Each structure stands twice: as C-alpha cells, then as structure tokens.
Amino acid sequence: MIDNYSPSTEKYSENYQIDKPEEACGVFGIYAPEEDVAKLTYFGLYALQHRGQESAGIATFQGEKIYTHKGMGLVSQVFHESTLQQLPGNIGIGHTRYSTTGSSRIINAQPTVVDTPLGPLALAHNGNLVNTVELREELIKSGCYFNSTTDSEMIALAIATEVKTGKSCLEAAISAFHLCQGAFSLTIATSEGLMGVRDPQGIRPLVIGTLENINPKRYVLASETCALDIIGAEYLRDVEPGELVWITEKGMASFHWSQKPQRKLCIFEMIYFARPDSIMEGGSLYSYRLRIGRQLARESFIDADMVIGIPDSGIPAAIGFSQESGIPYAEGLIKNRYVGRTFIQPTQHMRESGIRMKLNPLKDVLEGKRVIMVDDSIVRGNTSKKIVKALQDSGAKEVHMRISSPPVTHPCFYGIDTDNQEQLIGATKSVAEIATQIGVESLAYLSWEGMLKSTKEDPNSFCSACFTGNYPIPLPQRLKRSKLMLENPIQV
Image 1 (cartoon, rainbow, N blue to C red):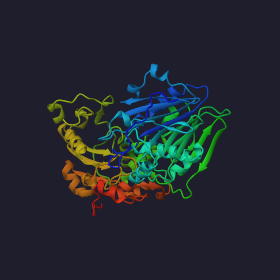
Image 2: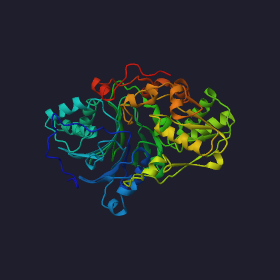
Image 3: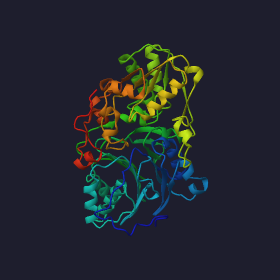
Image 4: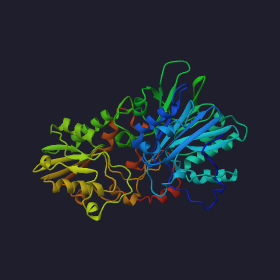
C-alpha cells in the first residue's frame, strides 16, 4: 500500500518534452530498526540543504507499507513535527532538489515512488542521465506510464520493468543500471531494504555511515559526510564507483555491478558545491580550498593591502591566499544568511542596487584600500561585476580578482546546472576581456594543473569537463546542440 501516491493515467507520449533533469541534489538514506528514521532523515536533509533549495521529500517503509511527504521549499518549510510523526518505519530515504528553470513543480519533487510486482519502490537521485531519449523510448515500448518529467523517474520505472520479468529487486536494479548512461548517485528504499548506488564514474558523491556498532548495524547513506555528522553517525567509507550496497536485516552486502568502473569525481564538488566541513579524498574540503588558495597566490601574486573572500564559497581560498602571500585577510563583505526562496519581488530601486540583499560591503574596512577579492568561479560575470562596483562605491582604491579554479568554458551535463556555452564568459572572452568587463584592475585564474595538484590524488580520477571539454561519458549530439557547444571556445 502506498500513501499519497497515485500513478498518472496520462501515457508518456512520443512528443512529450522532458524538463531539465535532476541537478546536483542531496540524497539521504537510513536503515535503523527502532529509530525515528523520519526525524533522522529530516536532519540529514537539513545538513544537505545547500545542495538544493527547490523542494524536499521523505519516504519511509514500515513493513510493506510506504509513507511519503514532499513539497516545494526548504526542508524546514516542507516538514514539521506533525508531518514527521506521520512517517513511521525503519527504512527511510530523503531528497533535497536543486532549483532549476522550467521544472519547478511539485510533481518533480522526490523521492520518486513507483509500484512494482514486489511492492512499492522509492528512489532519490543526484545527477543527470545523458541517454534520456533512448531510455524513454524503451520504457514507452514496455508500456510505462509517467507521473513526472524527470530522468529520476525513468530509473525507477526501469527497475520496475525489470522486476516484471521475474527478477528480484536486487537483480532488477542491476539490470536497470546497465540501461542508464550518465551520472547517478542513488538511494533506493523497498520493504526489503535500502540500496546505495553510484554510476561507474562516481561523478556525484555518496558515503556510508553507521549509527551504532551493533548487529545488525544501523546504516546511513548520504551525499556528504556533513549529513552523517548532524545525526551522530560515524563515517565508514564511500560507495565506490560502479558499486551497489544492499542493506537489510542481515547487514550490508556489496555488489560491483559495473565491470569497468573508472572514477571521475566532479572536481567542482571539491571547489564549490559540497560543504567545506564534508570529507572527500581523506580530508575536509575546507583544507582543500585552503590549498588551492595558497596555490593561487603562488601563481598570481600581486601586492595589495588586504585579501577578502566572497561569502561563503570564496572564503577558505581567500584565507589560503592570505596565508601564502602574507597579505592580511579581512572581511570586506557581509552576507545576509537568511535570504532564501522569496516570492516577493524587490522594487526597481532595490534591483538597481544590485546584490545588496545578499552581500553588503564594509565601507570603513575597504575605503582607500587595494583589495584582492577571491571567489571560486566566474560563470557569466554579471554577479562579479556588481560586487566589484559595490566595492568601488565603498571606497576601494583598487580591486584585483583572483579565481580559485580555471575559466569555466564548457557546460556540465552530469548534474550541475550551467548556462549554454555561449553564455559562459570564459568560453567567449579572454582573461583580459573578462577583467575589462567586470571592471577590475587585474584578474587571474588558478591553473588547471594547480587545481588538480592540490587534490593530492591522481589527476585522472576527476571530471573537469567544465574547464576542458573532455567529457568522461560520451554525449549524444542532441545534448551538445542543446547547450550550443562552440567549435572553438577561448583557451586560456
């Protein structure tokens, strides 16, 4: 029995247009008998809120019965004590969705729930598939009906279709994953147990934790270790690329479903997307961001009075730049941390004042100073230009910009929402032209080699396609066309 779930009666037609698929979302899963899994999932999603602010959802299993609740908005807006009390069970998964254009609808909120001959299945997905058209056609031939417009539901329906052939849920899942191309880190719940899955490249992260060292262990799956910390779970290890972990009352079993896994973790997770207190590659991302800040200072030193970081993502690199250069670090911009989703539009005067709702400069700190401003990236340049002007209006004598990553020259197809290539300023303008456009005295980016060297890992184990155009998973031409891939982007 499935509460709050009713399949659509509208068949997915040949002409049906898929909305922009799932972006870099947050997923969570827990197997914990005798624990309040809904509340633990809530806190896990709360820690992953930075990975998605559009919608949130939780599904729990109590025996054969599934309970679901999802809605638009932040985790704290979607869930309350009363709603969590209506989500009983010992297995739970949760999802927080990245805000995208054109698909901000409740039907696309996750977890996705589908019915199978073995009972209901709930799935939470982080990443993007690149073969959605082909997979959609196969599912249509199988008689599938769709309740949303996401690639995530396609994965769930592919599993359900495989179950119909007589396979167990585990066998059906593995068969379905072989039909999927692209990036997918998944938490999947059934009445039997909990799955954690990564694609063969492991582009999006997924970690395993334990709540208590008892038999059976109480296991937790999450996009990042910060979600383990908030509920007191101990980090065990990462789910490996091409691995499926199956957690039941017997414990945790591991299946390497892909014969040729080749790890390609998204480097942008380390530079920007994941929380700085999360652990990746054996250390905190705060430590990595300090290192790239130091490397940036070695590569592009310039004399100045102070170093400031763009809150929050630019601050660790700015501190590293300060430490390496010997130039004092200061807070030059104060962030309003309570600016979230709002449906109240600012007045025209407020819009003209640029970014003041989110960032406000400290005039007495900046006045008459030569400032080095450190940020993690420049995408289109509009925000950077507004921040530079705000610093100059506040009395900064000079503004020099340093970026702790290379120029973004190519769109991402694996789970981070980037613009079309013609809108990426790094793809169409040289560094000197970008500096002129945003109004700084000087601009320098971290080198690609310096970015990867700072990881202290094998450089070939990361996906850096947004900087190089070398995509680890082949892309259909239709996808390239959809992002207007330029023949000769600027190489810096």
